[in-house]
Structure formats: C-alpha cells, structure tokens
Amino acid sequence: MDVKTIMVVGAGQMGSGIAQVCAMAGYHVFLHDISQAQIDKGLANIEKLLSRQVEKGKMTEEEKAATLSRLTPSTDLQNAAQVDLVIEAIVENMDVKTKLFAELDQIAPPHAILATNTSSLPITEIAAATKRPEKVIGMHFMNPVPVMKLVEIIRGLATADEVYETIEAITRKLNKVPVEVNDFPGFISNRVLMPMINEAIYALYEGVATKEAIDEVMKLGMNHPMGPLTLADFIGLDTCLYIMETLHEGFGDDKYRPCPLLRKYVKAGWLGRKTGRGFYTYE
Ligand SMILES: CC(=O)CC(=O)SCCNC(=O)CCNC(=O)[C@H](O)C(C)(C)COP(=O)(O)OP(=O)(O)OC[C@H]1O[C@@H](n2cnc3c(N)ncnc32)[C@H](O)[C@@H]1OP(=O)(O)O
Ligand SMILES: NC(=O)C1=CN([C@@H]2O[C@H](COP(=O)(O)OP(=O)(O)OC[C@H]3O[C@@H](n4cnc5c(N)ncnc54)[C@H](OP(=O)(O)O)[C@@H]3O)[C@@H](O)[C@H]2O)C=CC1
Image 1 (tube, rainbow, N blue to C red):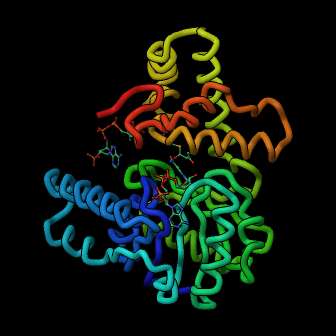
Image 2 (cartoon, rainbow, N blue to C red):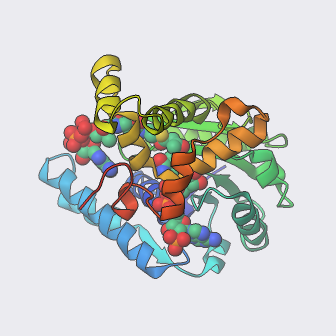
C-alpha cells in the first residue's frame, strides 16, 4: 500500500520523535495532541534536534526547512480523514487507547492503517475496539526515536499480511530495522528490559546500594549506555509502572510485581526527566 500522509497522535517524547523521523523520510505528517502546548513543545524539540544536525553537517538548511514544512500541527482529530496511516503514541492506558482507536476508526479512511506505539499492551485488544482489526498493528519505536534503530512490529490476531508488509517497508524507509515479535504482554523489549529496571528499583528500595552505585555497576560492569535508574527516568516512571502492571496482570505472575517505590514516585508526580524529577533531578 502506498502511504504518503501520516498522523502521529500524542506529541510527547515518543510522538514528537516519530513525527520527526517520518517527516525526515519524506512523509507528510500531522502531529496531533489534545494539548496545543504539548504540540508547541514537540515541534520546538524537533526544530532543535534538526538544527543540531545542520550544525554537525549531517543535514543542510534546505533539508531542515523541507522537513519542517512537512509537519502540520493538529488539535482536530478530524484531520485523520486525510491520512493513510495513524501512529498512536498517547499515554500507556488501555481505556484511553481503545477510546481513541474507536474514534479514529470512525474518522480515518477505510484504507488507512492504525498503528500503535504501545510498549506493552495487547495489540489484539486495541484492534478489537475498531471495525478494522486487520488494519491494526503494533509499531513499537525505541526512545530516543531519532537515534535508536529498532522498531518492534507486532501483529494482532487479525492483522493482514499486507498491513504487516507495509509497516515493515515504512520502517526501512525510516532507516530503522524491523523485528517481528508476537503479541504477548511487553513483547520482547519490555518483557526483558522492564523487570531489570524494576529489580534495580527494588535494590534501591531495600538499601542494597545508592542510586549512583546501582547505575555505575550496570554502566561499567555491563557496558549499558545508561544505568537502569537513569534509564527509568529517561523512559518516564509512569510508563515504567504501566508496563510492569501490564506484565503483572497479563501473566498473573508475582515476579512482575511493580516495586512500591516506583508506585510512590509516580503518585508524587515524580515521573523522571519529563517532570524534572524522578530518581534524579533535572534542570
Ligand atoms: C520503554 C520502551 O517501550 C522501549 C524503550 O524505548 S526502552 C529505552 C531504549 N533506549 C535506551 O536504552 C537508550 C539508552 N541510552 C543510550 O543509548 C544513549 O545514552 C543515548 C543514545 C540516549 C545518548 O547517547 P550518548 O552517546 O550518551 O550521548 P550523545 O553523544 O550526546 O548522543 C549521541 C547521539 O544521540 C543524539 N541524542 C542524544 N539524546 C537524544 C535525544 N533525547 N533525542 C534525540 N537525539 C538524541 C545526539 O544528538 C547524538 O547524535 P549524533 O550522533 O548525530 O551527534
Ligand atoms: N517513553 C518511552 O521510552 C517509550 C514509550 N512508549 C510508548 O509511547 C506512548 C507515549 O509515551 P511517551 O511519549 O513517553 O509519553 P508522554 O507522556 O511523553 O506523551 C504522551 C502524550 O500524549 C498526549 N495524550 C494523552 N492522551 C491523549 C489523547 N487522548 N489524544 C491525544 N493526545 C493524548 C499527552 O498529553 P497530556 O500530557 O496533555 O496528557 C502527551 O502529550 C506510550 O504508549 C508508551 O508506552 C514506547 C516506547 C518507548
């Protein structure tokens, strides 16, 4: 299928990154959010990252201007009527996502693919909120989107082969590497990553070591680019908690129980880098 126009729903850290790489690859992109302030922040961040590419000689001023001209801000979901593909990147909550997918199903043209960037929720359940489950698919980007090469692609029970192939081709056009994974809670990425992060939070909670020591062990000892607590702050502690809850509920296994300290921080509004405070504080 020929995709020319994309809507990215959710202009947070993932949505703005996804919109950026899609616009860089030549797609026309609506960057949609319920909050104009969030869109302004997302677009300002894209502009900053593109300027840095120009400074480093990795992109010309003309390419930057052309990329920005392909991005259209949107606070009206009716704009989805003009697109061939929607990539959803809103909060990691099944009720909110299914409500959005039901709305998108009403608005988007019949041929349009509805993809979700969910990091853990079942694609099949999201697809069931629509009358086009064969056109719903998981397209899971990694953070920071402009840098990370992987896109996990997850078929729901009803996803059509043609839809999978289209998403795989788009992933390659974005200069990323697609890896197919089955529809189970947390897929592969977060089934493996998030229990490690949760265990690091337990180690802090139990006083096994300081946060700095925990991060240093994993950085210097395992060559991870970021320690697990720094990474949790980077991902967002709310997102980490929602993923652990999906694993816990989805597998019914106590080995996935979220650490009480993680819950406490999220309740306090300490969501990590995006709110200026998590395990660490940020300017
Ligand atoms: C939760 C989920 O569902 C799934 C997930 O996404 S889990 C999270 C997965 N991501 C990770 O694990 C990230 C781990 N961290 C890293 O890989 C690295 O620390 C990092 C890439 C973020 C930064 O790398 P670094 O070498 O320490 O920093 P730095 O040298 O400043 O940056 C390297 C490049 O990344 C870019 N970059 C860094 N942070 C960036 C950001 N937030 N957004 C966009 N680009 C960024 C820089 O501009 C630089 O680009 P160039 O090579 O073009 O110059
Ligand atoms: N953070 C990460 O490392 C990764 C996250 N993901 C997944 O990507 C998704 C987004 O995460 P992330 O970008 O970190 O989250 P953010 O909190 O940064 O961004 C989410 C954005 O979606 C907006 N939003 C919420 N509800 C709606 C809605 N109904 N319609 C339109 N916009 C809405 C929010 O607005 P407001 O703030 O006003 O509520 C916010 O701007 C989640 O599903 C997450 O699991 C996937 C890979 C990695």
